[in-house]
Image (tube, rainbow, N blue to C red):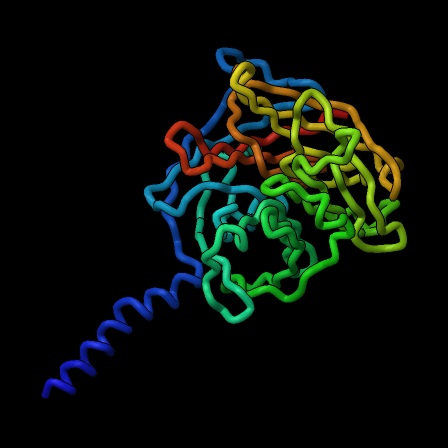
Length: 333
């Protein structure tokens, strides 16, 4: 009887905890609360900011303790279904709902899924799951990990994300990547651009002796290292290509004296090649006089009316002092 009771207890223990653990690697629906952001500048109805026009935004929250720390986002369908990564080792998915004027009003069908390794086990160590950048193309998600520096491909499944498929050589010497300041950006150029669909990576604040940021074209005939000019204490947090092949960089600045700021900088397509130092036009810069937070994720997509839209998302670091904010801007001609 005691053996039977012990065996039964072991089975119940497995069903209670083991099965639950196995489910950690599966997508789980999470209920979100959304509130609309109708003004970007605090206390002002102005909509034009530099080369951008504010469309709308959302402040998102959830009771689930895993919610937050969003660091990369890409749309699977323009302005609607999206896939993202969080830097505490989670995939997230959802859908932006809009009104008749294309303004975002809520997020639906939101879910979280823990990242798993090649054996299907949930990744535990922070160094192994610090996902910072994301690109998607043709059913493949490419993720840039920062602490244990690597660029990894995953298959995008209809029912969730499995383990990694393969790692990509990121070209930049590993010893040049600073701890917790490595790759924040992975982006794929348009097929009809000068880079012909090649992926690039950009570090957050891994700099050379001149203070410039390491970046690289990681595939194609122009494969090699280039540098991004670092200016005004801004660090790169994400990047995405515009339809014409120009590279758009999202940048962040934080200091005790100046607080938090974000910047969007446009790098001309013609300048993207190995061995060069690139700089670009600042499209917009904003500080805490605007509805921003720790802006970390960026995507560029085209609306059904042909307009180019820029979406940015903040990483709240799961801090009660910060917010998860989603913003949209229209790129002006």
